[in-house]
Image (cartoon, rainbow, N blue to C red; front, side):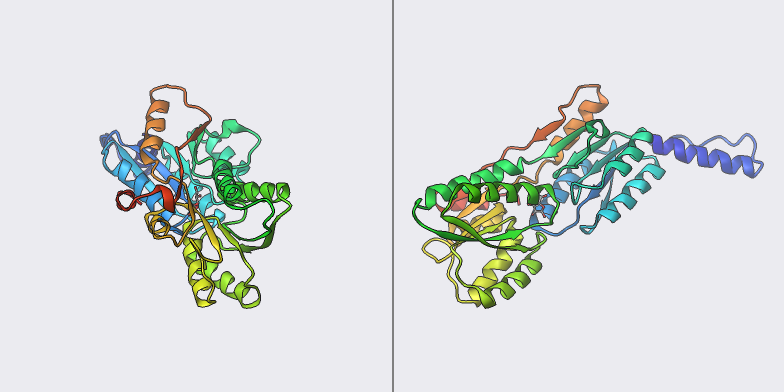
Length: 325
Ligand code: GZL
């Protein structure tokens, strides 16, 4: 609706400048509620599924228009997109932040423009939680704790293990909290050691690159703790090329996060030991929160999506085939 008035104001100004008189302002194009959505990028299968969930949810409803900008994993691109949304006078803004830090200024600009904003997927590190309506996404620390609890059950207390840690985008909530769970567990278990922490940026290509380089000098790995499926797929390729076995009965136990269909298939086939779910399909929930806001219904400051963890023992081919992403 704000966008309509911006357009009307521009039209009126043009008419005044052109000396138009008696020009009837065009009728409102429609009562479309315009949402500006700044998405992280398209770095992983998870992100593609998340984008599909968001776009499909609003595409099905003609009373909404979703303007999505892909930031290609660069926070600066998100700042530009948000400032464009403000200038366009959108009615609502959704941000899936690349990293947690650096959002104070642009969130203050949104607040000053009087536009409500939801933080989606990852979180932002700001002192004033009134700068956004709610943060909807996963409990990433719980995901990490599900993984280390599984590993605790797998590893006898007297067995020393070397854990290779593949990290996602440094500073992203998913990376910060999945890393915290592992590091806290390693501090608790004298027989656990992180042999190295490699930066994979949540992408298959980067993970393959850093794993290949690492494996040239080091092959003594017992566990791969990989912070998303696409990095895991790159790592699996590097392990194969280095002649290192993995999965059930292999040298390296693989733990991965997201639980996409491809990862679950590997899990079902015994090539990945644990898939910790990270649910991307929350487009409908985001829309429900926006509807509640528009109807004056209070919404909680944090909304978590339901998630689980899967092993070869607890999934069937039917379950894998049924996965939406
Ligand atoms: C998690 C999301 C992460 C996924 C990755 O909510 O932020 O970013 O785990 C994605 O696959 O790149």
